[in-house]
Every structure is written in structure tokens, then in C-alpha cells.
Image (tube, rainbow, N blue to C red):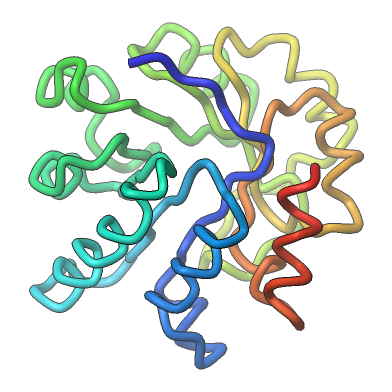
Length: 206
């Protein structure tokens, strides 16, 4: 599967959307209407029947619009939904195990948080690496130490895969993150803030 990493990588984080009173499917439709090229479904709670059915419906919105559809953490769910990819973290199944399960059916992304993990991730059978949090983030209860722009700029050349920066990225700092060497910015909160169509128009013009 050929893969070009879009500059804007929006994440549909169920908990963040619920805190804001935003319907997940409505948000997915807005992303697609804005022309995004990739969408990640992120559900950190128990992946029960409701979560599964929600993931199914998001896929029905994203995939017909030719947006790559990624599932966070769960390779089994990604395979069942015939998603385009799965994104796993340091505490999930190792990328090699994910690849053994998925073969070439899924694109695979892998989170890293420091130089050692980034370098090790380059040897894994993944399609891109994520590095962060670049800035402070409220999307995790126990976030890893902040990377910062200077460290991002130092580490970006060490990545052997396309690099997604994540963590506290906003419309105000996104360009500086890309200039520091990231190929893409993953965004959980900022695209939801204020007038979403206006925010998404700014994001998709990166």
C-alpha cells in the first residue's frame, strides 16, 4: 500500500469529544467535508460493543471519502473493520507482532517519546513514527516528558521513517513544528476549538 503522510493528522479522540459535547460522527463528517486525508479513531476506554459500533460508523464516513482510516491501539479491531491502518504505542503489541498479524493489509504507526525509542522504532516494520509530546498536553493522564522544539529539531534527522509530531500542537505553533523537521502534525484538541469549520480550513491549508 503506497502511503504519503499528510501534514495534518486529526485524531478523533472519543473522550475529548465527549468532554466538549461534540458528537463523534458529526465531527467525523466535518473532517471529511474539510477534505482531510487521514483520520484516527482513538478510544482509550474499554472497547465494548458501543465503541466498536462507533468505530464502524466512523469508518463508513471516512473511507468512502478516501480518507485513510486508522484505529488506535487495536490491530484486531482495525483488521475486523478493514481499516487502512493501526497506530500502536510503547505499551501495546510490539510493531513486529502487529505486522505478523496484519501482513501488508494495514499501515502501521508507532509512538515514540525520546531518542532511544525513535532510533529503535526506525528498525521496526512500521510506516511512520510519532514523537511527542512536543508541548504540554491534556489528552493523557500521565504524559511522557515534553520533547520541545529544539529536541524535535535535533531528533528529526535521526528518524528513518516519516515523522509525526504530537502533543499540544495548535494552529499557532504547527508551522514551527513542521519547520523543526516533522513531516506531519497529529492534533487531538485544537481542531475542535471554536468554529470547527474555520479551524479545519486553517489546518487543511498547512
